[in-house]
Length: 359
Ligand code: MRU
Image (tube, rainbow, N blue to C red; front, side, top):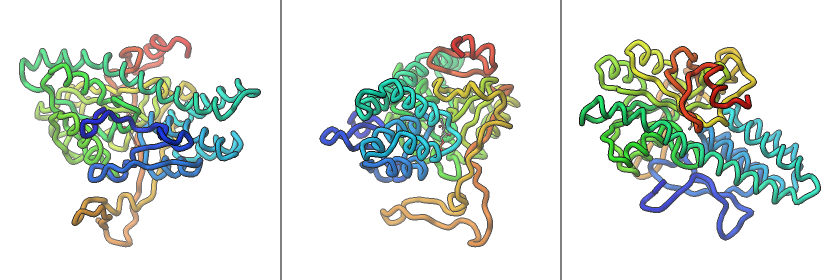
């Protein structure tokens, strides 16, 4: 996507030094555009764990590059894989990427492991790039159909968290159909959930959409139900961190409540995801998907710009406890459809297998 008129991805090899991986450090957005150099396995581990990079496809791609940097440092493959596996527990893409690296390196045992790891990391990023682009193509008709019904009025889309290009390599998952519809001239408007506690919607999605010139409005997380009751949302599109083979969807905390409100108000609720997010080993999301619990400081403090400096402000009484569940699970019965790189399917095993017969 474009940032200040320049083509930009979320992760890449430093052009003048291929033993360095560069990322956008997302902790500083929307106020500062900071590029960070990652030079070691530990740099990548920290970047994922502390959310310099975040979002399911990007976490996977970063882990792929982490293996490459670890091998460059002389660390063993097992050390690299084990360290990166510990970085975050929920997004399936992390484990998918590490499995790809393991297979690639096992197959080239006698060859140059570092070159093979770099090739695999770049392939992971390329797969996610292509898949997100295709998600946009398959999701586009949903917005086109709504535009016909709206007869010249903007299509109102609600999204939660950041399932945008910042969460991926490019395009995004939930945002990919939105970008493609906007680029085709469809009149649309996006309701952006702020997404407490880390405010990925307010900080990242709003910034992304703004860079692309897409009309959007940031709302507090609790506003969606009210908007749906009053006919102000035509479709909800969110991303996913892990989707089980029965169609249950783990995504940023609060997604489930949006799905309930959408169901009660007959608003279509779509989940956009590449197949790297599907965990074919799990049959039930609520009991089987590991839900990350993060530090309570993320709930107790809020970050923002004060006198041109990014500062943390305490919100709660200093000694109150806070709970910080990072994801929730939306049961498949509330999901209208899954938008994937192979098309749209129902959120159930047979429909998903129809698109992905190898599973
Ligand atoms: O905690 P985060 O910011 O990594 O969570 C991200 C999300 O929940 C996204 O909605 C999800 O990764 C979909 S990805 C395009």
